[in-house]
Image (cartoon, rainbow, N blue to C red; front, top):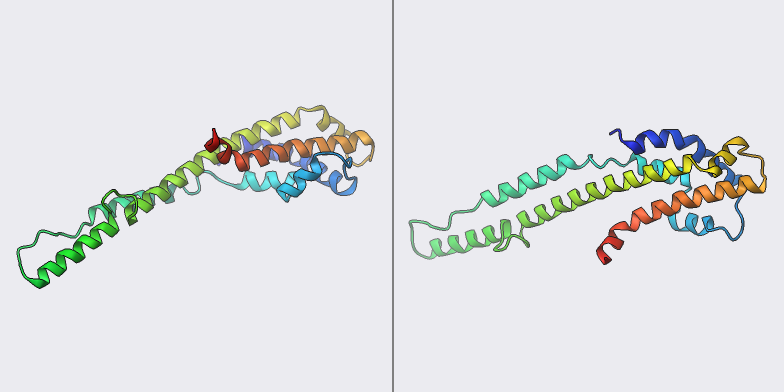
Length: 193
């Protein structure tokens, strides 16, 4: 998949490598928010962006359709309950066929194999949509970072150890990790609105 994030991640990679290296070798101001974000995310800005950029929102689209097809097949696989014979065996058969039909399709479809497959397919669709939106937002974040004064400061002398370089690396790292952290929790924020 080639989208804005794929293209921008390749361009931003050298800058993010410098950010990671500066944070590892030069540190950051003691009171800078980067420290809390590093603990929360558990990854450096460069590693976190690379991980996120490697996620493909279309990777499970085929699986989603397979699940929908299988749910439809379960709905179509109803065991016949109208039979021409009578007696105890016929009653047992009808009871078993009703139970099988309820298990496959359910009365309302929700708590059945077909309903659960459809719900899983819906979840995959929502996850793919969220990932697509998130990739767009992360691409915008990288675009802002690439055009920032901090990026210029860091790229001019990445290992100078000057306070400006240390602050620039910390600011970029915090901006990127903050955006990624928001993206990770965005579904929760949306549900609460």
